[in-house]
Image 1 (cartoon, one colour):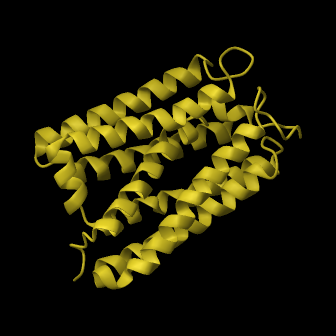
Image 2: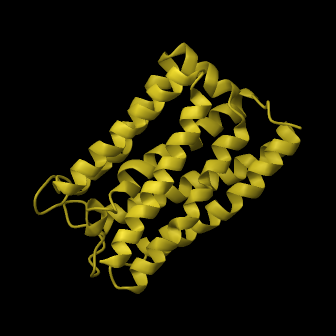
Length: 233
């Protein structure tokens, strides 16, 4: 379908932006940036392979429990990897907080959920909640990032509220997606279900973008707790 092709381009571009920003932020030099980018790209490729082989679909694979693992496991690996690496831990403490926040502008592509819902390819309440939530968080990311960049610690409360709502949006969306998808955890039986989220190109959202963006939310909480605000200008 033409829309699926367009979505593939949009999601791949969003992933490339996120990978590039984080590689530049966490890499102390060109070699380190290449290593960060290559590892994140490898993760992206693994997700594409999982989608292409339908390993997470209920009919041919492990279904929604496997999708939960695909979301949570990368976050654990990212967190452990950053905290165990002295250079990545230093970067976590010094990267402009506005960068962690600004990267979420890509979430305005949550409009994709609304289009799929209007086309009868995703159910309510999953699609409307995920779509409007992402759009709101994405639109707010720019102003909040700018406030942090300009005012530093003075914008702490604004950043905390935005970050809390942004992470909750991801959690709620994943939860609704799981209980709307065929499998042992399904609680919402409206048709269509959310099964397409385990196929190409849609698995790129819960399998790559969601855990990557959720990890940046956790990074923001870490920074807000420890008071690292090198942004103010």
